[in-house]
Length: 251
Image 1 (tube, helix red, strand yellow):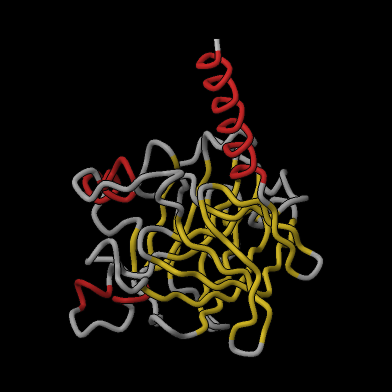
Image 2 (cartoon, rainbow, N blue to C red):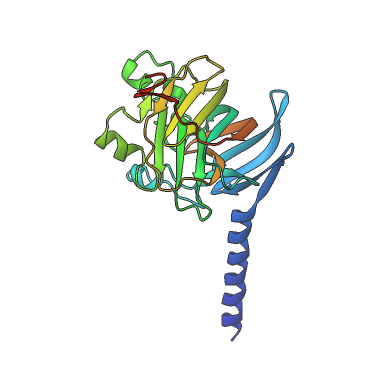
């Protein structure tokens, strides 16, 4: 009987711990973030208060022999209060470091944004960076600096196989420096701008996600320490190109 009671108590404690992991919230300014399979805190960093997050490898294990299955997953900090983002602008300042020691030697400082996140975490879209290769001396490496993917059916490895370099690109980014990422989302298209540059660095012509509206989150993956501040989310209606006769403006 004592063993049964002990098991029930341990089971209850585990449920509480699991609930706490999924419901942990952090406040930065007037924004509240809910942590999903990441560890996080609000800290003072380089003169500003920032959200610091790292992937929680206990909550969501990583396996270097099963990359496709164990990366680009549900590890992010979700912005509370926005669950119907469809079209508009997401802008954030972020800073990527590699953990030391690193649990994954090829780590490239994976950091970025999730959007149109389904309420139950079953689907979302993402654009993220690999800052380590943004200024590499090898052009092939540079071409992997930006990545788009759609969870769960179109992760990075799948997209490389079916459409090499269509969903990846280059961007002038690096580790250990602040990067401003701005994503303009309009219907099936997403366009990414870096560091207030006039022209975009990367375009996804046709996104592959199954969810058309949802939440917004900040993402890091294996071996990355990510710092985030100044997140701005602006919703707007779908912009349709103007049609003059048989001609669409701008084409």
